[in-house]
Image (cartoon, rainbow, N blue to C red; front, side):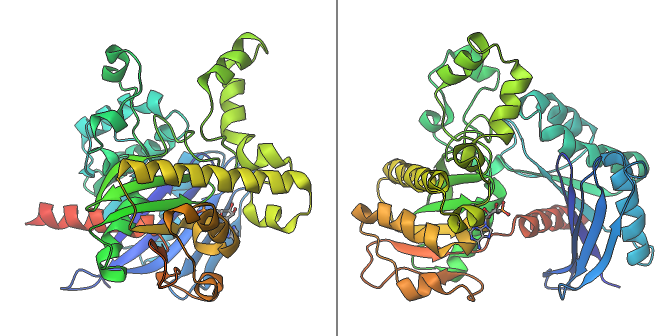
Length: 402
Ligand code: AMP
């Protein structure tokens, strides 16, 4: 049986996982299993699919049997072991949202690293504790297994000072209030794919639009991130499914001082009730909004496209020109309508889509969707953050074994 790498992406109510087999010699990673435990604490279920996409298990649990993430993790570990005939992965890679100011690369976790990541909890209170829980639980039961923390912030750590800062007193910057940027694993995956799928622009000036339920854009030049729409938290920048994107800080002050909202209530509003959902009052899902003839659905999509267009213009300024745009993630990969609307809004940049290539919904993999006359090339490239995590985990595993 081949060695495997397990990738864990633990959120507030779900634990997503992927198991990759390591092919002998070449070091190729092949996805062998993909699944998640979701509805932890409310309506827990475990579902997993094999490499052919066939469901290999689908179990519903009573809340009492899977009340929290720790219990879910225990269940997942015993199911995985049974499925894999008792074998344990040689290494486990974790998505960790925040690497703070210091980690510009992904790292093997030891007690020291874990303590440093713990200190970052206040910078990402909704995500970091969930990310660290499985690392700690696995260290307690399997202390010998290599665990690797892969950060959403790492790819952005080389931003120039002007893109890394807010105009606030230096002391606050030193305390960690910076423009970190997120979705770094996705941007890293796209950047590494470019020499293979779009070699003519790989070293150029590129804006990658990661448009999913979380959405951001990243300005890349010579394969390096120079700026991104997200900042201190994943709330900033583009409007998202349920997050507002860019918002005047005065709005927060108003909600607290004049409407008497607590910090918790404001946090809930900003993470769960704004964005497409808040604007439309209908749904956070672009598919629902496209299918609706309610004017509020139209307004929400108009706002999304307008803000994406503004961000594209501002990131183009950051990299002093534009050779290519890459669309990725749920909306970016699957919605020809939204891609076309964002490109139309940005036609002043000389963007011209090939309508047939853009509309080809059955096309899989990376593809060019701009016309030969377009001054900016436009691509759709499916992202794969989990493969990126597996790749880094394997690299560190190999380095440690040398
Ligand atoms: P992600 O977070 O990358 O998984 O993206 C999830 C989001 O992608 C959903 O909330 C939808 O809004 C969007 N999405 C997925 N499929 C489509 C589609 N065919 N058309 C438009 N939006 C889509």
